[in-house]
Amino acid sequence: MTKGLLIALEGVDGSGTTSQRERVANALREQGRTVHTTAEPSTGPIGKLLREILSGEMKTSPETVALLFAADRLDHLKREIVPALEQGQIVLTDRYIHSSVAYQSLAMDKDWVISLNREAKLPDLAILVKVSVEVAAQRRQERGGPEELFDAIEAQRKIASAYDLAFEQENLGPTATIDGEANMETVTQSILDIINKRLEA
Ligand code: TYD
Image 1: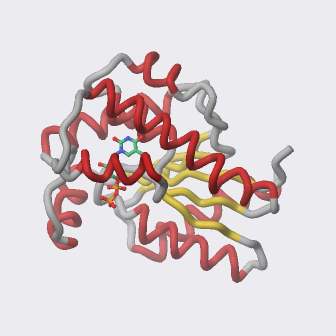
Image 2: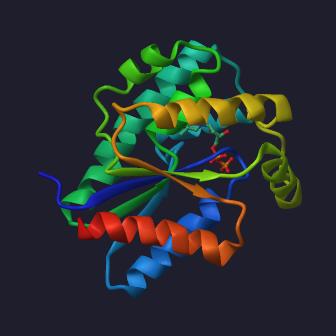
C-alpha cells in the first residue's frame, strides 16, 4: 500500500512546469509536507538513453521511443517514486503518463500508447499547465539551449491538441487544468490550491 500522493505537472515544452514544480514543492514544504520532486525522462538508465534520442545524438523509431518512455516510467516508479510514496511523501513529477499519451500519440495510436503504460501506477492527480504555443515558444527561446526532437512550432501545436485529448481521457486518473499564462505567483497558487483540495479530500 502506498501512503503518499503522486502528482504530475504536465504541459507543452516551455509551459513552465519545471519552475512551478520547485515553487509548489517549497510551498508544500512550508505547510509541513514532505515532498520529493522528480521528472521524466528519469535519471535512470533508460531516461539517459531517452535524453540522447531527444537531443538527436541517437536515432530510433517512434515505436521504440514510446516503448522506452513506458519502460523508463516503470523503472522510475520502482527506483524512485514508489519508495518515496511508501514513506508518505508527496511526489511531484515534471511529466508522467499524460506526456506519453500527448507526445507519442502524434506518431502512434493513442490506445496502443495507453496500453504500454498499463502497468504504471496512475497519478493521483495530473495538472495541465496550459499556455498558448506562441507563449511557450517565446519562453523556450528566452531559456535558450539546443532544439530538441519535439521543439518545432508545428509539432508543438499538435502536441497542445494531443494534450487536450489526453486530459479528456477518463482512464488516466483525476485531472485538473490551469491557466499557465498568468504570472508566476498566480500559477503557483492555482496549482497549490488544487493540490490542497486533493490533500483535504
Ligand atoms: P522536458 O521536460 O522538455 O525536459 P528538458 O526540459 O530537460 O528538455 O522533456 C523532454 C521531452 O520529452 C519533451 O519534449 C517531452 C518528451 N516526452 C515524451 O515525448 N514522452 C514522455 O512520456 C515524456 C515523459 C516526455
